[in-house]
Amino acid sequence: ILNVEQSPQSLHVQEGDSTNFTCSFPSSNFYALHWYRWETAKSPEALFVMTLNGDEKKKGRISATLNTKEGYSYLYIKGSQPEDSATYLCAFDGGSNYKLTFGKGTLLTVNP
Amino acid sequence: DGGITQSPKYLFRKEGQNVTLSCEQNLNHDAMYWYRQDPGQGLRLIYYSQIVNDFQKGDIAEGYSVSREKKESFPLTVTSAQKNPTAFYLCASSEGRLRLYNEQFFGPGTRLTVL
Image (cartoon, rainbow over all chains, first blue to last red; front, side, top):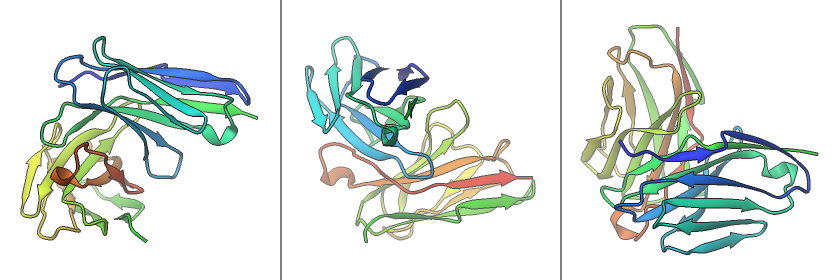
């Protein structure tokens, strides 16, 4: 079973703070790395699909980077807002059989 | 309105009973998946199906069964052989082989409690 680790497990920040968290994954057999955002009582929704080493993607105040050689991806949130409170999941895609291996997630709470 | 529906949202069953969780999608996706989430754990894959009438075991298939008779439906049966069935169950779908990267779309989940 593949090891996909996310840190920290949980994070509390104040509104307006910028924050970041990490996803580490196997550096071999890499095909893609997915980031999802999962708000309480809602379905997980896709944020980014990262595929190339050095990729950097951005959606509004959220951005992500990818280092496939060392096996990590960072997710950054600039100027956190209470509506950013959610669990952020990363998922490793080794390219076979459409399977994704998920990390345990980082639970972000943004206090107003 | 395209999406994935799971019903019911909450389900209670007595120990020893089989129970079937529903998952329907109208996204015309080829691939469908069942995951389980427990406190402090990541999503763990139970079963997946790449195409109608075909499915494969995931990482924790013991005590579960599935069928894929129609493209839009992928029901999961939690059998009495599943030792710890109380959990949150998520269904997902993806375009599968039609798309380069396996972006999955999730339903709202079913919380199963076995009493």
